[in-house]
Image 1 (tube, rainbow, N blue to C red):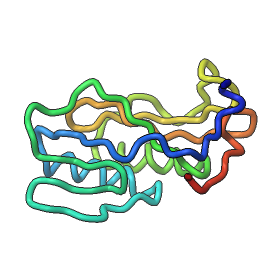
Image 2: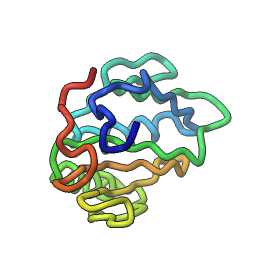
Image 3: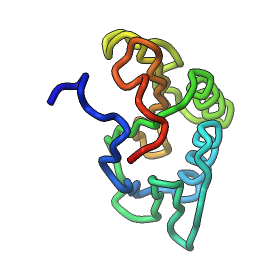
Image 4: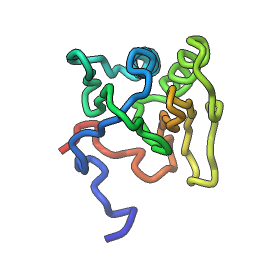
Length: 138
């Protein structure tokens, strides 16, 4: 199996849980930055919120040193993700742009969530592996 022959439409995980030290601020972060990507908060309890395949939980110790990357369907969503986060007072960890070290067409931006986790929005532009993958996951 090679990177070129992988079926990028295959789902490889069901969900990710992020434990938050400041639950309300973490929920605000994910609500803010995921909205431009079309990812809504689908459900919420007293100590958890579900953003499709990402759950934020009011649990200790907080998740730290995590890198999570969200798929985008167009380049402008990467820009909107970063702008929304910065305008809401969250920390940038890399402005929108091409990251040639990850291959041609890798367009991404990075923000730090309230616990310092590196959250990325990625658009795989023409020329990047996975660009032409089906928009429908299997």
